[in-house]
Amino acid sequence: MKKAGNELLQFLAGLAMLIAGLFVFSQKVMVTSGFFGYGFRIGGIHMGNGLIMVPFIIGVVWMFVTEGNIASKLFTAASILVVILAVIMTTDIRLMHVTLYEWALILVLIFGGAGLVARILFAGRHASLSEEDRETLRIEETDRKIQAIEEELERIKKER
Image 1 (tube, rainbow, N blue to C red):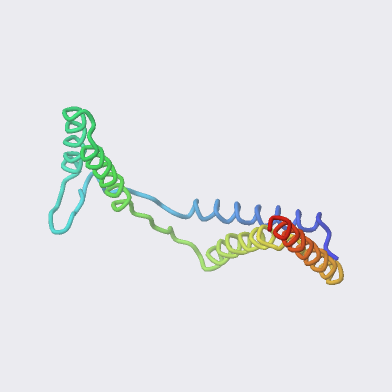
Image 2 (spheres, helix red, strand yellow):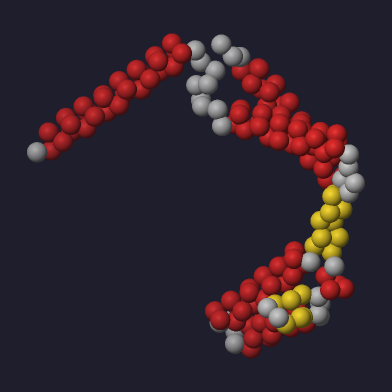
């Protein structure tokens, strides 16, 4: 029979592994953005970094002129989404030079830790019980369901 303390230790160890793996991974990744130099492409049209703001400016002016009708709000929201997408699409994420050992260590820490955490979080509520205790709980639950059905049938009979 497992003890609750053992599950707590497994959860904490998994969480520590996950955090350590993500920390080491974040130290080995370089994130840059080329938004200011490259601009943004929509279809075949190249938009410079300043032109991406034009739809947003038009939407804001439109909202103030028409006192915030729904079309102007939708247009402004869509233009904000385009600006956010432009920043995300021009972000460049690169993994710095790592040895195979470091890469394997990072993967084991991240996915091993996530596995331990997930096993504890998604385990059934009776995972630490013995098979006999589980069977007893199943029988008790079935008895409760039968009792509820019988009570419902009695209530229906009284209503007729």
